[in-house]
Length: 306
Image 1 (tube, rainbow, N blue to C red):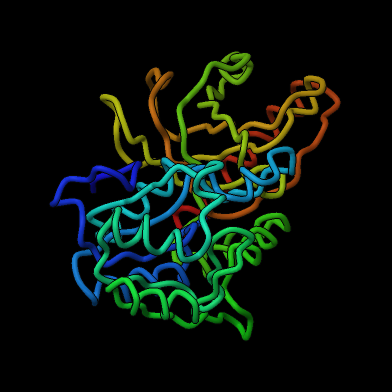
Image 2 (tube, rainbow, N blue to C red):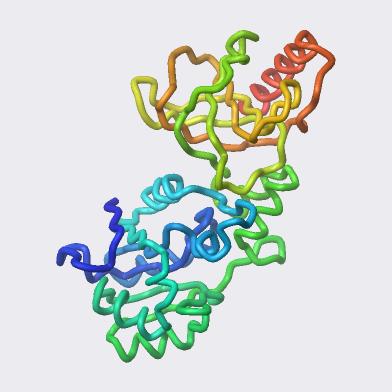
């Protein structure tokens, strides 16, 4: 998959796609329906924005994203997307009227042949453009438009908001049912305090800055090491939280990978939340903490084996 971060000056081979358009946070089953519809219309591309428009308009709001741009790109590549148009969202993009956007970005810039969106899609300055407006503008500027219906699960619409709620409540399996895949946290392994190594549980530490936080606690996880000489898939147990045994800390993800030995600093991991084991706890001392860690790992192994 080729990632293109501009709508101007594109090579001829990068123009003329049938694009699915939206933010695609989480790349859930509803998003996949939009992408599959776009694929039926021609050479598949996805048009999205970075940063997410909500981050641009409300930079001080609590983090809400289900995935960073790296994780989104990895997931879209698995769906067969040939071109990812990850367009910068700033003052210029925010100022486009619906017609300006359709003319300058979609028609003149990307030269799209077809655009597919969800039925709740809005666009243009002030989110004033509706799917009906997009359809009319497509006729005017020479591209087709398909509006994909929203999908439902358990009688409720599948949405990024519903997935966030499930994760916040410690229900990763319900989130996975709406996503169509396990929820993953992806990123680079960073240096931590190395306490896990001293306790016999060396962990791969990852930042969760900018992401919506699932319920803090311990999870059974599947781990894909994406880079480096030990690339591959493993099981593990991960603690997502602030480490209350050791003072006040910013949240991060610490993953103990089963049956693994090696240095992962600087490598990229994808950690999938399989099941929620327990909330964060503060123990009376290190022996009690270590006993619980052994119990967590035994339970995680059993869940993963099943």
